[in-house]
Length: 627
Image (cartoon, rainbow, N blue to C red; front, side):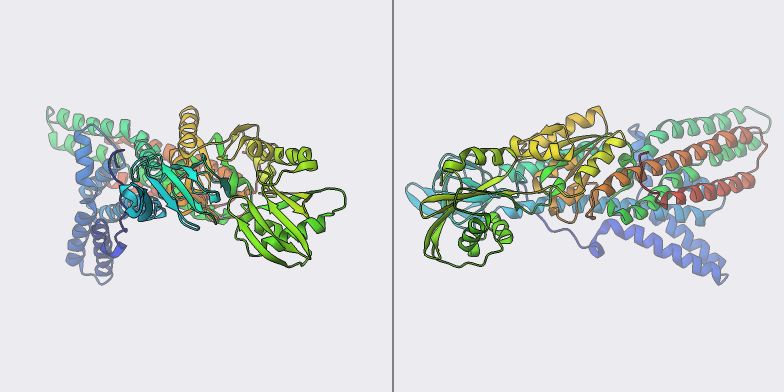
């Protein structure tokens, strides 16, 4: 993880076929497969050699690290697997030990690669900042590297260019696509004195911006650092199997060592040394090692039928514990497709006239509001002498009438002022239409809720899950849409750091999921107990930062995914209880000499079959309903 003062860099991810971390697990798998072939052709000696080689290759990826962590007093799944492998070898089941080592080593390697890929995808955000930008220094305009920008430098940003760092507009008017920072789908009009953020895309006007942050320490670089810090904190959280391993492993080792040492004081030390070995094998975590993975793999595979892609076992475990869900507004609760929802007109003008004249002027505009106006108009009119005024609107002539279309900041609503205020209070962005110097109408554009949003929120409430809206949008728009969705807890005008802090605070109180789709949501997704990215419409940064990707279109499936995870967690807990029960039963019998090594192995194998069968039940999806 980078420090605040260290410049962030972006490097391509090493192709998987050149990734050295995958070499040993792959070799272990090939050797294990070769040993199976040797067994089929009765090449016993070759089979034994290949099994030993496979075991060595697989175990080398985790056994040394488990032992090093043990010296530091840290226990985990790696140590459990090491003990299982040693126990299997002591029993002469080298092939089983090799299979165990291969499966665990390849799983660990793939998980590490997934983390590297997430970081690489996150740092790709830095590509949103242009390499070079125009700067005014000492009265002259020059081209400078974005990384060399200093506070108080004056940037010259032309139409369609990205802003290289945070700043304040000194001169010019334009509209900015700020979705990378605020998540708001509708561009924001800016003029002198307005703040702008790094990565924003300029509209049609030219802006002179005074930098308020250095080129290496702006909104986007802060997002990258926030996500990396959140991932680092999350990496310290113990998994369920790890929490169980902490008391189990030292107890088993101590018990076995005690039996062996006490046996040395008896008349038959060989008998007690053998019993010590039986105890070690009886407490071997074979079933424990399988209990969680088989359930997780089954449940994760079937979750994809709900449009939910769960990236790891840890994410699946945490998904079943969630008690609070934080929802982003734009692109999550809403469609991220602004559309005309209301048209107010003055006397002498009707909706078709207002929309038709506005659409004629907006025919060639690339502004998202223009798309909404054109889509709403059913009248085909053409305009001439069209002139776009950056940051204000458009003028032109339609059917011989002089027409102006623009924001309320440029065209006063006049007789529609009261109605315009009401429309704005309902979360609409306004387009005022003036025909022949008379106010003709006000067009209200809004990014509407998904049709199933309110029901999805209700389903979460039915499951005892609290819901909060986190958005970078203004409080008025956020409040209006939240009420429609049935959300009472609202946090509006949130910057990425604000969202991350709010999620961190809530996650400390109860397991919290964050659902978002934009770059601005990435830190909060990473800080949450479980981050859920909207995979269809979401940015790459959001998807890489999240633990879960939702690739479906129906938000109600997310509530069903929580049901699925809760059921899977119950099955997983049952498997762990069964594995522990086997240990509790076998250890006393082993101490009493009731069971031999062969009998202990047989019971372990039967337990593994039961655990696997129970874990496979997690693959079934049940009908929806609160659980």
